[in-house]
Image: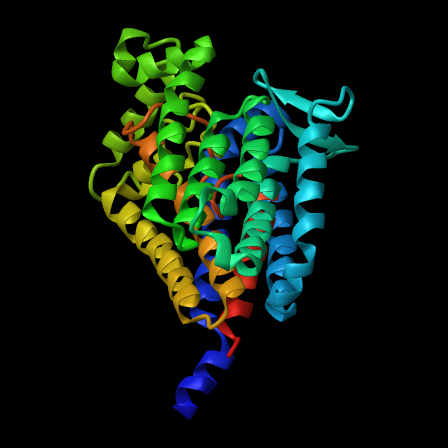
Length: 366
């Protein structure tokens, strides 16, 4: 028993090592996927990877800092965290502050720095929900008992879908459902929430013509090979070209401006082309290892707040990995969603690494 306690206090070192190695691997793949585009557009083949390395350094610092910050202190930040998240999401719509790219306003800019508030909102929601469920666990069997969490979650979803950002909206919605399920609410209450959530998805698709076009492209991408179906077709070409062993690192063809967003949302397709099915299997093994360690941390935690916090952070990572993989492989309609720790984007990288530091801190608790 003493040996088990000692190991527990040492923390989950393998989790941190795997997270750091995955982030370093992400920098390598970003260079491979973006070097040509970066050279053509910015005159610097290292343009994207330089930014990612800065994010890696800051993310590593944030992860180390979170390792030593007692996770229970986050309980007191439940309201400030969600208020800041809402304010940042609102700032997206302020002229001169919000940054628009490809028809969507999903970032806020300060000088030369851009931040994606929706990435922050996911983790703020986890902190708020974990604290609320911990404090009000006696009332969670009823719909009224979980209503505050629903209100906060739906507020975030409404602000994110207005950007528009369907993919992150889906992530927050699934995260909300996952945490409500893990809270121990009754089956009746959970189904009462699940049914309108399921009905809302087709409604959101119908409300925006471009979502209908994406759905049509998903059903038959070759019906519009130069328009909505183009990205998915190029992604499938990349995966097919990779075969079992891949074309070799740095030898992708699709990265030569055939596949849009090769360094971000569709970097998994480039990985599949260069590393093949075998390489993707090893990569998903690493992702599965991170998810398993997160589940293990939650399972072994002795207090409700730590359990919900660890489960929530693990859910955020797991949901994004699964959705990104399904999109790139054509299993679900195309949507813009980064691959955690790998895709280009510092906001996602830094906050994801920080959340893994919190998981480590929880693993050290008695």
